[in-house]
Image (cartoon, rainbow, N blue to C red; front, side):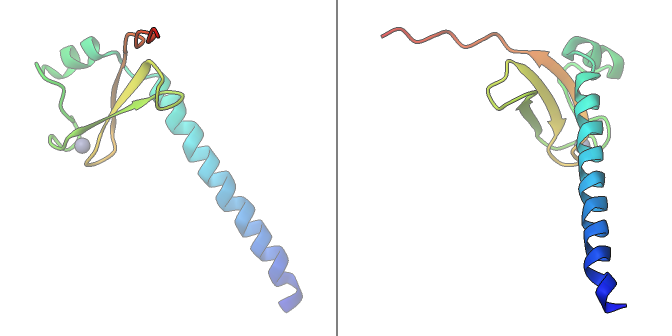
Length: 96
Ligand SMILES: [Zn+2]
């Protein structure tokens, strides 16, 4: 039995890595399918964006690809629900 333990450990490790990647891919797909800000506000009847799952909490603003991405994804800081996306105008280049 003990000589199978390393194999079982590796199988378990690969399974968790697969699960982690699967969850990550799923969330990335959900981010790209999010409604834009105007549609989100219209759909939930809000004037100001708020979380529709828990109804509270500050909102988190992240870049879609990287931190500086102009495509922004907004989620709830309290319950982590993805809310909407919007396009931020690119920051002007600094001239020296
Ligand atoms: Zn929430």
